[in-house]
Length: 171
Image (cartoon, rainbow, N blue to C red; front, top):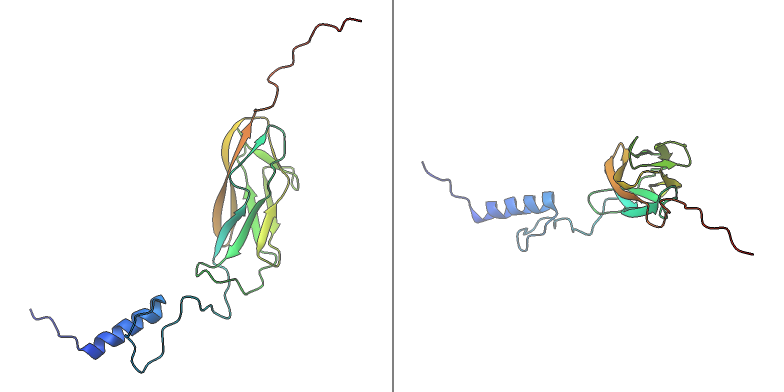
């Protein structure tokens, strides 16, 4: 079996094609042709294709107390370029466990809430409060662009385990 010989000019064309497809520049690979796309060049139209966690994880709250940081996600594109299309109103559902250590969203009064993204492609689930069960758990955020998870914990630290009556004060 013989291996076909590849001419130097063919190698240049293959490298040039790979550079265009992958966005990786190959020095000297293109002679007389267009330069490969630079890694910092972004498309004029760049819609989102993923969901990223923006804030709210990891964090801990005392039992029956609100978490200090809002659970927030952002629509993004895996190419690293800014999203250029308007994504206002994309539905994102935040869901906590239905039992055990969990919490409640103030906007819905339950363990789940659906919110729309703002003009920056961000969705926030504010007002999440720990329930009465201590422990760690995850809250998911899901949209048509994927799902991500927040790491949360409810803690009894700083909460009295029991109240014991004291002696009456002497006059």
